[in-house]
Image 1 (cartoon, rainbow, N blue to C red):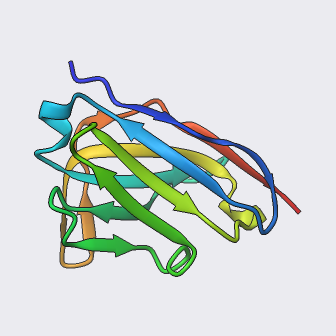
Image 2 (cartoon, rainbow, N blue to C red):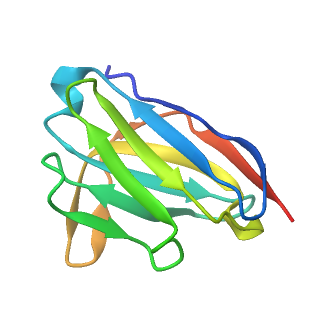
Length: 123
C-alpha cells in the first residue's frame, strides 16, 4: 500500500496564502501525474489542479486559475499547491491524488489518495 500524505493546511484570512504539500515514496511519485482535489462540507470532491510527471502539462479549474500554482519535485517525492489570494469559498479539505490521468478536460482519478488537509479561509 502506497502512503500519500498531505500537509500545510490551516486557518488563514481572506487574501492570504498557504502552500500545501503532498509526499509519497520517490519511486512511485516520480512516475505519475499528480492531482489536487478539494471537498467542502456537504459537497462532492472537485478537481483543482494537475501536473504530469515531467511537469510539462498543467491544468487548473477555472475557480483557481491565476491564484493557485501546482508544482512538483520528483527528487524528493513531493508535490505542492501554492494558494494565493485565498477566498472564503476556498475553504475545503484538500486531497492529493497520484497516478491519475488528465484527458480532454477531465481528470481520471487513481486509487491513491492522501487523508486530506483542512484549509479554512475566514472573511
